[in-house]
Length: 246
Image (cartoon, rainbow, N blue to C red; front, side, top):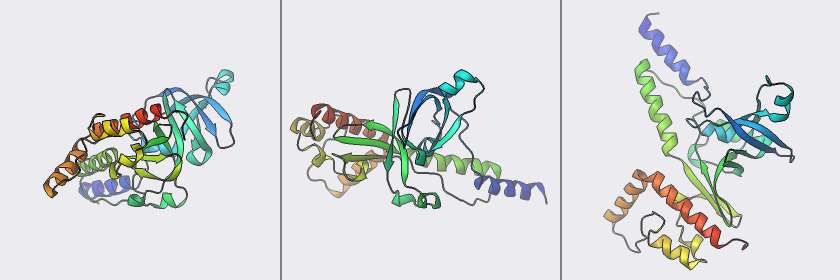
């Protein structure tokens, strides 16, 4: 087998190999609450360059065990084991969601994910990332594979959803594909500010021609992080104004 064919084979094998994220925040103070209510304090790793891993599992070093044995190894807890966990100021809740746009074999086992909390109150919001494909095939050079993999990973980052529910009713919806005005209509000052673009979102225009609609869609894609921040600001403002209400 010549070197070129060997490179092709190695690249194909790499695509089918699971690799945990290399870049990590390192262990940070945090705690987890298991399904049975048990609370375990210690240190937890988050994977910021592959945040979809944070939705499936965590590695936790139990502080009580570390006090006895500083060489204690971290224990892996899967989403099925967890009810909640927090790392620093970042909180993660268990959320049930079926990603119909990206159904995979792994989704047949569970559709529960540990999602980062963005807003809590009457409107709950969580960030959801789709997962890497179960299996993929690729034939090409090592350089082509690296570029291909980079594009695939970037698509996962930019394709995130903000899942929202109001008053714990109904299935979670993606805020980017949802008319949010009905969510705010019982709080006129929030609705008015949202319609006027006061949270950093695009102002709401009642009637739009085809060209205007296409332009709005293009802006939504190009400025998605800013739009996400605007939505979260609106949700949190709404929740602040509706504390104690349900």
